[in-house]
Image (cartoon, rainbow, N blue to C red; front, side, top):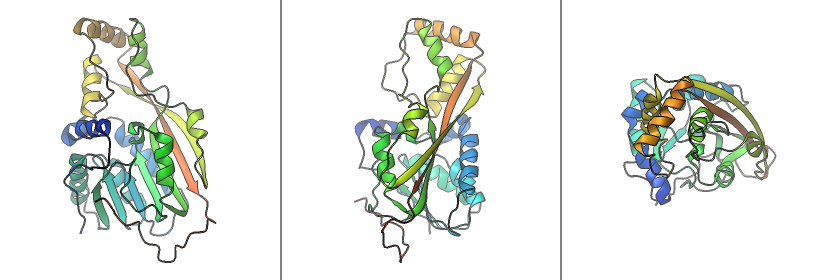
Length: 285
């Protein structure tokens, strides 16, 4: 039977614990998650075209409320899948979504920080997938290197994350008033493509996804609902915020998400004994 971990993961940092709390409002997240569904669907389509085994062993990092989980189960043969998120509330919502969809089974759920996977560090997964979670990693190169070590020979790490250019319109509205935009430092495409992961190859593509809001307040409310307000800077003074919002709304209250799709493959000829083809053992204690 699928299981869910009730407590937040202990192997994490104070900032990531704040991120987990921000993302634990699963109901609000579902209502406000505008781009999450199409990005997850697009990533699932890319994954379905990969040369995977007949019943791939899958790890999902940062499942949220289950958009990618559902998209993968709809496109790939049912098999063992470990679904993880740093926020227990998200895991519970994802588990409920998959149960309501009549999933045939084979799903396990674990509260885990994807940057610090509490899994035995040896190859085992044919696919590690993640949609719009990696932008919260404090050390993206280190996290991807760690996750790639959990791949079986020939396995794939497929993730969608945010790249440089995300929220460009909101940043421009702040700069118009002499402010330094408060945002996470999204990496440029060249930096992502230049990552060196031992024993792996990587390809990166970036596509803009645009989202329109009724007004600036609706945009900010959506950011708060999906946890994107956890950037570590104090809110703008009310008067300053009103001026920035007017500038933002004059531009149509539209924002661009620069969505980077990264496909990493571990070399198939690496010396690793995979005769048992077992999933990595959970070792969270």
